[in-house]
Length: 93
Image (cartoon, rainbow, N blue to C red):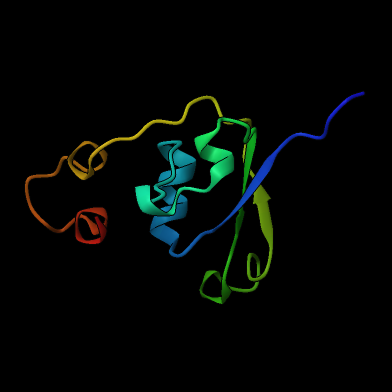
């Protein structure tokens, strides 16, 4: 019997997050919020839900990304190694 691919639906909070997901190919999930299907390695795909601040073209829509190739735990400094605190990810970690 063939099984359906596993899909995680995540909220895309800001346009900056979408830019990072599409250009740098990663998405930050805080360690204390990681769902079981990510921890156990069964998630094959991630889809993003877009709120109203993305405008009419994306508001309320979903976008499925290519197949997940890796999941790893990294520190905030590894995600955004900028020396100053102007990077939004440094402020959220």
